[in-house]
Structure formats: C-alpha cells, structure tokens
Length: 311
Image (cartoon, rainbow, N blue to C red; front, side):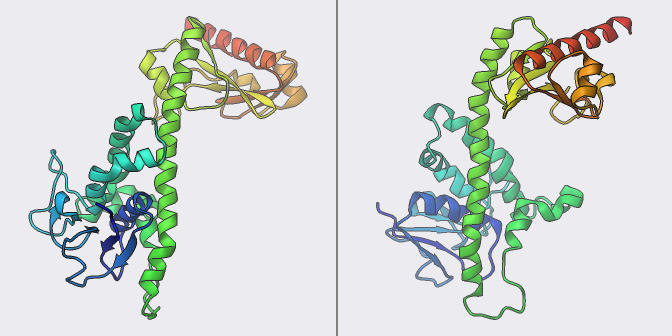
C-alpha cells in the first residue's frame, strides 16, 4: 500500500508525535503531513498512517495512538507513547534507510528503544517525572523539543504548524546523531577487539585513531590494560582507562610529576623527547610522535606497577 498521508493532531505539540514524524517522514518522503483533529482525517483509511490521535492502536489499520484506555504497554508493562509504537513497527526500516548494516539492526533497534525511545514514552505518559534529571531537567530531549513551541502570546493561526515544521529537522538531527553514534560504537568495538588481541599481555593498547574503547575492553575482560595510545591530529595521545563507565577514577594515573607540564618542562620531567602536554588531572597526555607516546606510556606503566607492588 502506498502511504499518501501522515496524520497527527494539530495545536501544541509534544516530543512523541514530533519524533514519530521524524521516523515516518524519512520512510515516506512523498506523503503529506497533516496536522488535524478532523474526524474524517483521523479515521483509518487507505494510504494513511495516523499517530498520537484517534484513540486506538491497530497497526494493521495504520493507527498508533496511546491516549485510550487501557494504554498500550510493553511486555514489562511500561507504557508506549506514539513514538514507541511507531518505533516498534517502523524502527527497523528507519535504520535500514540510514544504511545501518543488517548485522547491527536488531542490536541498535533495541539499544535506541531503551536509551532514547523509552524515556520519551515514560515522560509523555506521566510515568516518569522530568525532575529525575535534577538540575539538567531543562536540557532533556523532551523539554528541549517542547521549548520550540510558540510562545503563549503568539496568536497567529498557523503558529503551531510553523513551529512544528521548524522543530522537525531539529528533532531529526537528535535521532540521527544518536543512531550514528551507536553504529560507530559497534564499528569501534570490532577495531578495539582486534587491537586487544594484538596487544597480548601488554599494559598498553595502541589504537589506529581515537574511538570509543570501553565496552570492547570490558567485553574482552582485558583488565590488565592501563593506558591507551592513539594518533590525534598531528600528535599522539596517551590516555588512562576509567575503572567504570560512570566513574572518573582510573585504573592508573599518569605520573604525578608530569601534572600540568608542557613542552620542555615535560620533556625534562619525563625524560622523553617529544613530550608536549600532561593534564593536571593525570588522565591524558600528548606527545609529538608515536615513539614518544609509547615511551611515556611505558614509563607510566612502570610507575603504576611500582606503586602497586609497594602498597
């Protein structure tokens, strides 16, 4: 069936139907987006996908609302909003439209559902209070997207529709960026896994470029690794590895004597020609060459092992 119309409600908008529209307009670019509550439009029919309006959920009929009772829920009884319903039925096709590899589709679909879609659904249904984000409440995706609605005293009859049209590409940028990062993470995991195997028992992991490495290290059980070395623009980076993803504490710090030093001062303190910079926090340093970076990493490993044996 050819989809000719994408139908959602008019008036003020929320994140759920805005994000649903991101998915659907990508999949059906020739379809007309109609914002209305007219009964004829929000009644299922040939060529229509209706969402966040109509008080029914029937995928075969092409209607995806969640305002009826009972609210449609996931297997774990967490509620859907229109976004969750659209993602459930159209998410895999959307990922294919973004050229996500077939082998990664299911994993990325589930990951995006958990990290992006579900919070939107919970907030839209009142099952999660935005205040759980604390001082960052105003920076959540739901709040940011709804901040794009027209101000209260803009009485132009098409103000809501104009604001919705302007908000749509912004919402789309958030969705595509999130998915692109998830896809990139999977590409990185394959590269890091190979680098871990190549490193063997070394405490130093050398990567061909800067990339996410934490999940691959955890998956490989590579607890022996202490530092990561990789090229960065025209220089080389030496970085520590955090104990966990939600902590700033590292498995090992760079030598304390290097803290905050640059250029000649760092070369003198480290004894390494080409040492350029070490952060005060001792979590990253920079060298001018691969050889210098590896030497600095070796010195950092020696100091960390000496500190461990002396403890």
